Image (cartoon, rainbow, N blue to C red; front, top):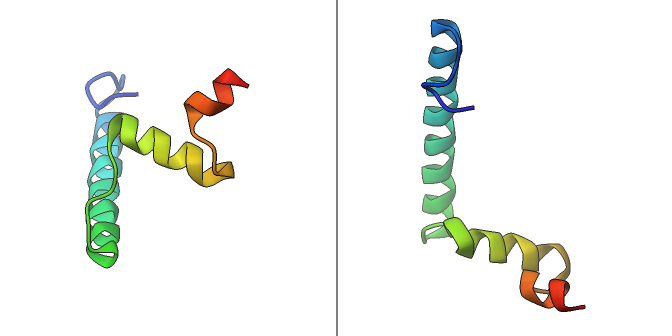
Length: 62
């Protein structure tokens, strides 16, 4: 659920906190890794390959 879609102010505040926490965690991981984390479709491919070494496209063709 998006921040603005939350039905109450408490929900919106919680969503903002979660987003900020996730951004801070991402910065910390990127700093440790020494490079940016993959975003969007690159991230999808990275996660797909990490699970079993095959890309998503290869899995669909099987």
